[in-house]
Image 1 (cartoon, chains in turn blue, purple):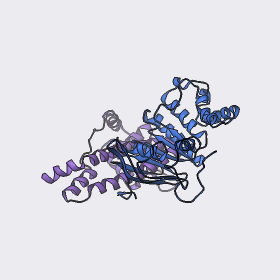
Image 2 (image 1 turned 180 degrees about the vertical axis):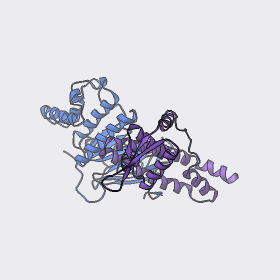
Image 3 (image 1 turned 60 degrees about the vertical axis):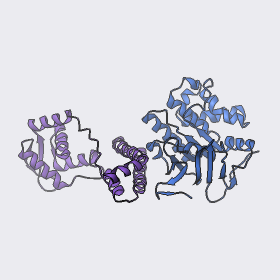
Image 4 (image 1 turned 30 degrees about the vertical axis):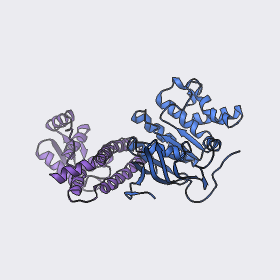
Length: 236
Length: 175
């Protein structure tokens, strides 16, 4: 069973007046946002503004306390845990600042893993993993354990792993946060360039303006609200 | 101030005609702001008057007669001194951004909106520069990097000012 986005016109992914609190602390207050297919969007904002919480709600990792999340014309936030997990595995890819790879496994193992979990045959999974590692300029490191790789190499493996399932959307949370400027730039260049080639939507949370400048547009999150910096208005 | 010194520096490589100097200047330093021919020749005239360059005799070319300029020992000394001296690390606090924010607060205008619009303008320019970096030659990419880092510094200032806008408003209205 797979859950595909319906080929509808309009936004691919949408948050409508989403609210989410941690205990008594509100993280999102009526946050609304829509993202079109193939778009590269940057979500910016100060630390603690709610930008990562918004990303997690959009990706179906968190369920909102109020409001709605729609993906491809279907309500995402009302799906059960199993369906949301499946959606994350089949339609979404993730790149985090660190921690998403298994350090004891090789780069090829890590990239093939989501395919193997999705019941792709072993031979085909590893073939595709190697193809993606080559596109990320990592073919020589396919057999190396990711725990032995540099920060930049690790993030490129993470990008390969996020793209290997040909997801509709990639969610990236501070993907270059632990990298120096040049290395981070290289990672972003590869992530955005390859996503554009594949027609994949990218939503990247970042506090780094140079990373955000790789996107088609950016929104700001302040005190849990999404603002459109071009209008200076709260997005409804 | 940097145009005369830059032209002197270019002449320090080899004697050149005004046309060639302008071409090299525009290629490396004049991105988006080419040097007018009039400024090239007036600058060379002043440098010759001050003994920093020497103009050769008029030579026939494809068009009007032209002169080849060569740097003098005095000119070379000036270029070397300029290159050895670091540029002033100015804080740029009294920029137009700062002035506009303070004036907006003093006049009771929406300073937050100004900062948001300014932020969007900076981001738009940063996207253009990022594209230049992706598609351009190394010289263009490095010049774009310089502009990007400066714009990024402005953005950080915009973010810090946004976070402290309430306190700044109280300060300037009390004054």
